[in-house]
Image 1 (cartoon, rainbow, N blue to C red):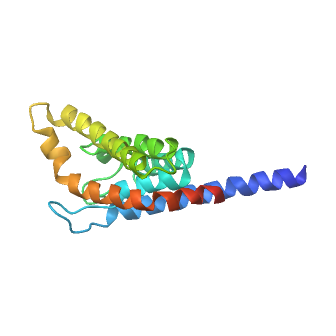
Image 2: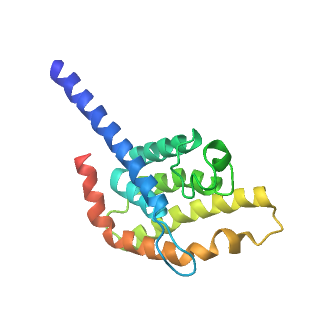
Image 3: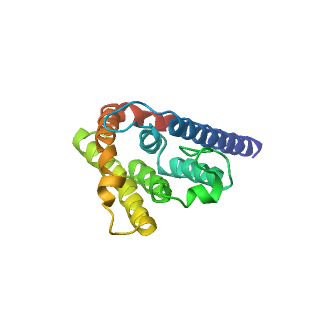
Amino acid sequence: MEIVKSLQSQKVIKYFLIIIFGSILLTISAKIKIPFYPVPMTMQTFVVLLMGITLGWKISVSIISLYLFEGVIGLPVFAGTPEKGIGIIYFTGPTMGYLIGFLFASFIAGYLNFKTNIFFIFIKLILSVSIIYILGILWLGNLIGWDKPLFQLGAAPFLLAELFKISLLTLLAKKLIRFRKFI
């Protein structure tokens, strides 16, 4: 009985550390801007999908939930913070839909299980990123008005960068999925 309790507590500690580390990795990925055409990119969506593929949906959704909670309570974890504000004010700004989309994207990337077919992995990642942009554009339209060119403002400038990140993840996916055995 003692051994079972010890193993369970070790597992809880391991998951807790993975979730904390994942939140830190997501914060770092939001802060680093990489020059790209037509706009600079962060690796945030890459990390969201990477976590879903590598860690599975339960852990990746937990990581993103922690990350969003940290941002809402005022920690400067989001891209553009603290320069553009912090806390709930920043969270409910123009990027809220995208941030909420991270939860759904990591769920899809981790839940749909296409281990062997590279084409299906690519489609899964396209679907995952699409959810981020659909929720982002819906929130943006709600915030700034539906009469604006929402797709041109909220998605088009980022599509080339997303295609690059998705292609890279697709090529790495088979190797990344193997990490789930160790978790």
